[in-house]
Image (cartoon, rainbow, N blue to C red; front, side):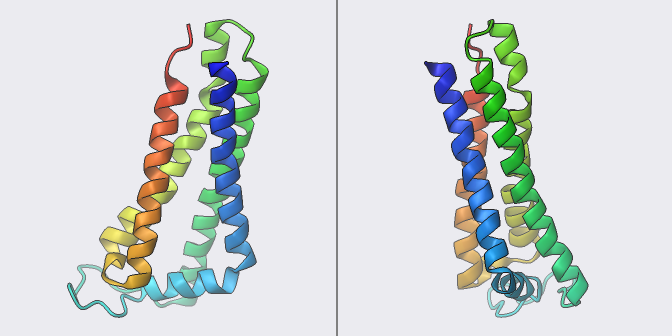
Length: 161
């Protein structure tokens, strides 16, 4: 039963990533506007100066949009495949089931890199998005998602002997 539940947990993570990415595509202009706002360092009153430049060049903002979408969809697709791998090997040996975890674990790591690496590190530390109301909301969500993928990684990676 625990193996089936691990597959289901990974599937839930996959669906979350795919749903968020698809909603971002559905609202692409809004997503672009939010990233343009964050990358421009507007409304920074706590730390008005940043060590690096603000980015307002349109193609770089679209590159950021594409990078976020790529991370969200890649995490989702790896997790979807990983969920299938776990479900399809749930009745096999412990070593076979452990080996089947690889794609799911990669998906978790991509999720961590997307929400911790992009949102919290680049968005939060570099662009200081925590200084704006819009940014602080994104930081809270990014933390929850990154932590959730870390937790899923630990749960899935635990041996099932």
